[in-house]
Image 1 (cartoon, helix red, strand yellow):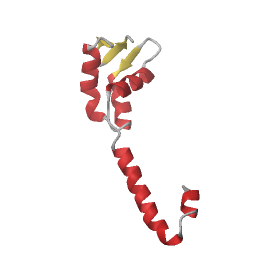
Image 2: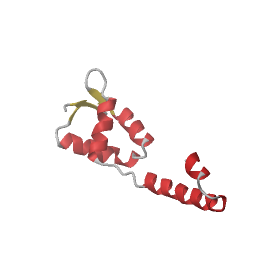
Image 3: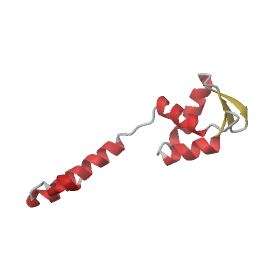
Length: 95
C-alpha cells in the first residue's frame, strides 16, 4: 500500500486512498455465511472427545460476525447427520 501511494502523484493520493478504503469496506461487507464456512469452523471447535458445545460455536460465529446463523446452522448440520446431539447444548461431530 505504501509503495502504491508513493508512486501516485501527490494531487491524487487523497482520492486514491479514499477509493481503496471504500473498496476494502465493500470487500469485507461481502463476506457471507455458508455451510462450508460453518463446517470448517465447527471442525476447529471439536474437543478431544469429538464433541462441540453451543457456547464455543456461538462465540466463534459471533467473532466472525455470523451470530444470527448459529441456530439454523446447527439444526441443518444435525438434520444432515454431520452432528448428533449428545446432551443439552453439546453435539458429537461425526464427519
